Image 1 (spheres, rainbow, N blue to C red):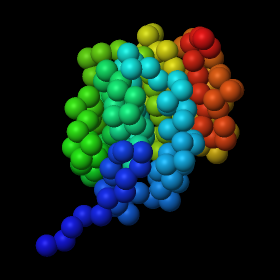
Image 2: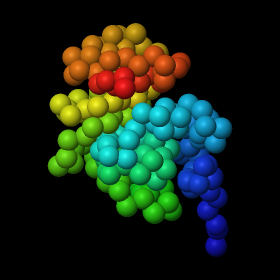
Image 3: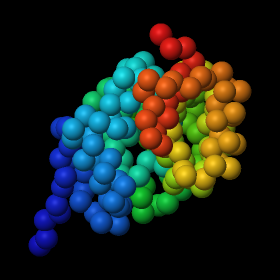
Image 4: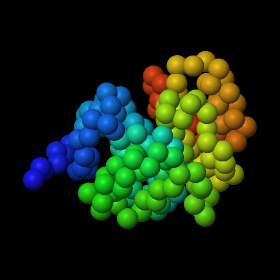
Length: 180
């Protein structure tokens, strides 16, 4: 009988699976343990009253942090890979995160107010129908591809979101409808 190894970060548990915890995912978890990077941006921008949509969930840090640490009303993960869905469900169960739902493509029957997207995992494009009218904020990990960036940023601005430089750093950029 083998026992599964777990990584614990800020009170959250993640299965130590090399298939899903790639080097960038491990970096996110390491930064979260120091209160840097994605965790800090989510803590300062997301509100418990938000309903979030997460695309490119990676290791599950963003949805686990949003649902577990911040306590958002609901977090929906769009993940087409069934193996990654199973991994994310293990993260969900290990942390008792009942406010998370997962589907392949369809958006849940609510309109999200917060968007978290790793565009390096989604081919540099926002999934269809993620820019909803009630969107209050977004945190995006941008790819190194200038064509993708120049396509996505105007979409966010057309949706009424403004670049928030104070919280943005490196390839993690933040957008808000209002800065206060």
